[in-house]
Length: 179
Image 1 (cartoon, rainbow, N blue to C red):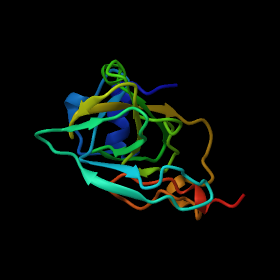
Image 2 (cartoon, rainbow, N blue to C red):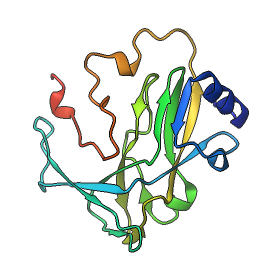
Image 3 (cartoon, helix red, strand yellow):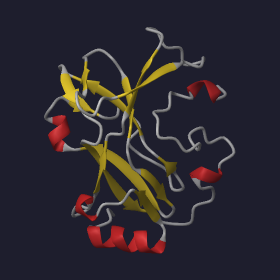
Image 4 (cartoon, one colour):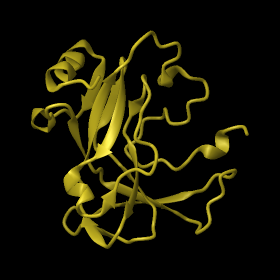
């Protein structure tokens, strides 16, 4: 079940959902709009290795001039909003207006876990050149009700790799997995 606007508000009042900064005009019928933060990152190496730490270069997007995204490049972005979800599963989806510009905001990581507390790193790719700006609407959070008790919340997992609060994109931590 997807939470409605009234249910999202009730969960915010209970402290089960946290959105900072919160703007009531961003609350939709059954979602909350999130915005592109001011930082982007790209990987340093042309070939990424899943078993190694692939380093990134982080840079700030000019508010006045924006930044032109290029096809064939994976950009890591970040949401302006810091969020917490203590009783629901959050899903991040792109806004249709963003998709109609040929921008994908995530390759595979659209689902958060109960207990996820952070900004959202975006895996941005484009079909053609497009100029973006910090603060532009980039996606929407949808919250799903959870059935049953949660044994281990994400923010309490010993092996959780994305718990450090940040306002910058975070590179893949696949290299920390044992396999």
